[in-house]
Amino acid sequence: MRGGKSFRLLILVLLSEFLIFSWAHAETPPQVIRIGVAAEGLGGRQYSYRLSLDVVRAQQLLEKEFASSGTKIEWHYFKAAGPAVSEALASHQVDFVFHGDLPSVIVRSTGIRTRYLLPLYARSNIYVAVPIKSQIRSVADLKGKVVSNFRGTATQLVAARVLNSVGLSERDLHLVNLDTAGANAALATGQVDGAFVMFNSFGLKDQNLIRYVFSSDWQPRFSAVGGLLVTEEFAKEYPQSVDRFVKAVVQGAWFAGKPQNRQAVYDIWAKSGIPEDYFVREYKGQDLRTVLSPLDDDFIVAKYRAAAADALKFGLVRKPVDLNGWIDRGPLNRALVTLHLEHFWTPTAADGRPAT
Amino acid sequence: MTDLSQWAQSGARPGLRIRRPAFSPAVASGALKRLRPLLGWIVPAVLLLAWWAAANSHLVPEEILPAPATVAQAFSTLITSGDLQSNLLIALGRVAYGFGAGALAGLAFGAGMAFSDGFARFVRPTFLIISQIPVLAWLPFLMLLLGIGEALKIVLVAKSVFVPVALSTFAGIRGVPVRWLELARVLQFGRWKTLRRVVLPAALPQLFNGLRYGLTHAWMALVVVELLASYEGIGYLMIYSRQLFQLDVMVAIMLVIGAVGLLFDRMLALGEAWLTRRYGGAS
Image 1 (cartoon, rainbow over the protein chains, first blue to last red):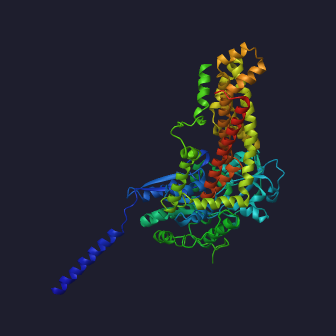
Image 2 (cartoon, chains in turn cyan, brown):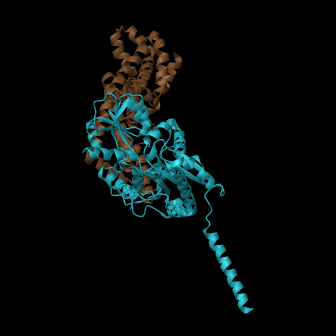
Image 3 (cartoon, rainbow over the protein chains, first blue to last red):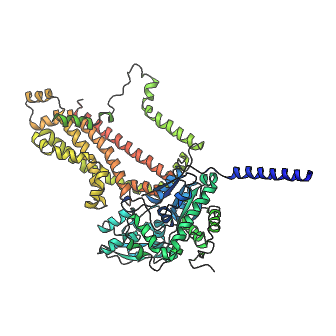
């Protein structure tokens, strides 16, 4: 009986040990999770577009994920985009943010402590638009002209690369800082000689007010990327909530990556007020599985490294930005395993081609 | 007319102009008297100290409040690169044009309202409506009308000068004591002599009140316009540093903006003192 008694004691000890262990590791979920999105819809609509995160919002994946713990999900959209979101991060107003590559690098350079979790868009396109009657025929013609660009956002960096590709720099132009809506208005009324814009300017082209003298045609080297960041503070206190958050975002990207859901994704993006037709035209021939891939693959890492290097080269940050230790792959890898999605996406190599 | 003149008086903000220090000579004697010009620098010095202490003790994180030394470094970089000088020069040029145009128009308009009741009645509602719309509210409309070039900046600066100058010119001239005008009539002063010897000296303090207030407004309006639609200028430099989260540069430029504003005010104060000596003050 002696042996049985000690066995039972052992079981008891193990059980209590397990209870203590799991009690210590089951975090109390936060009462509220605040999400900052560096974008806004047309006319101040509180929706963004071109992100996998938009699917998450529309299908309330986070709200459902956190319903059991009573966590409130707050969505904040920032008209002033990246720079405003950086300020919100600095003043502890948000826990998770969607940030483009340049603002992410800038945030990293200021010493605000964040972790990079996964991309929310992995490909983008940029256009150089000029008023329809303009004499400007190419990017090189922009020299000495008044050109609009959205400063401090991922677009600024892409624009600098486009200029660099024809041997120009920002200093060769008169760059006016205008947001997307402002740039479109300034172009339409001919107040600027040109502008770096996105596909939301298609309307002006349709009205024959502008024409494009450059399109990046989805070339990876001109592509910006944007991803999900979490504050170090939040990640330390609520690691399990970070995992749950990332899982919901991966679910959104999964939905968006299935070919049969293409139309549904456009419908979601159209909540931003941008006509659905623009998405159809912009993303024609592009696989949303690639465009919205959540993988922290070589391509993404190379993109952020390039962003840091170019930001320094073009004078947008003043000292080298160290990205080591910033990307935290743990939550993404766990989500892929939990959802059995390890093979849904193909990793991309640094040059943008599928990795072999 | 009483409502307008009362409003004009309040609009001219007498508080902005410190006429006589409220120290009695008996108290402020000897060493204290010599220290008097330094009194105004106590608060800035304390603030600087508090800033230094807050940054040094990391009470406020560096990413929110850069340390004074970092800001000084940013300031010297701005000077070395020439960015500060070139952008400040552009901004000052805009203020010069805008202030010149706005002040002249304001003086003429205010004088017109003061001298002619008919004119005052004719333009009063228009003037009130225009003056009630703030610079920021004019901006979107004027951007469509004038574009985002120099004209926009100069017109908005001129507007922000025009209103206070017109109001204080009106109030200054209307405020000339009736007894003085009666005396001028008794002495058989002509129209020009009355203006030069009676009206101008009496109205001068009020006029300068308006000009100083106008110049402060001009500078503020310019910074606002440059923040929003610009590719050069001091406001542009500031918003550019904000977009790139270079808070040290941003704070350095804020200090420059404040310093230039202070300099403007001092310059006009000297101008007023000179004119008062020349034409005889009467307040």
